[in-house]
Image (cartoon, helix red, strand yellow):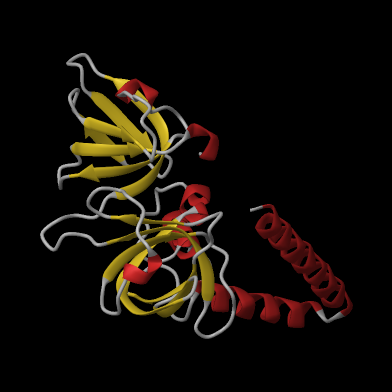
Length: 249
């Protein structure tokens, strides 16, 4: 993320220099020419057929920033830090999965997912156990969680943080989430809110399992910044949680 932020900062600085150069040039031109150029620029910004004195709604601007399929009221930084895509597998090679992204988010069509032993997890969508990459076949439907960084190549390439596969045909894929808050309610249930502002209802008797350990964990162990797999129904009621180690959150 530091490299991404540095790149954005550098781009912003370059943009600032370009703006200063344009201002200096405008001062040397005839005022009437500057007015026409400014008006043309504003018209291009808001789009054809829109009066320049009309303000573009803030929600519209934010929607353009976060991309399609993302609600404008969602936190921009949270959305950009983690993106979920899905689609059928086009092919599997050593440390690599090619997917036909059909999510409507990020790049549409083929994306190459690099699988890193240190950074990536490939898990079963029914029980949360690790899956060998070789067991994924062409045509399998998978979900992948990726960051915003992607190569400019065709097809684009990125590294997957999480791949969820082997999802039952009549089942719903679990969600990979980072916890913002976990609060117990008066009736003993819990309200779980994620960093990207999705809320779940967690029954008091909800099954919770640690990831690849025999440690005993309870719902009280789900805290801010915890990362989990969450299986839920359409109403947002959770049936099962797999809790990842806190030192990896």
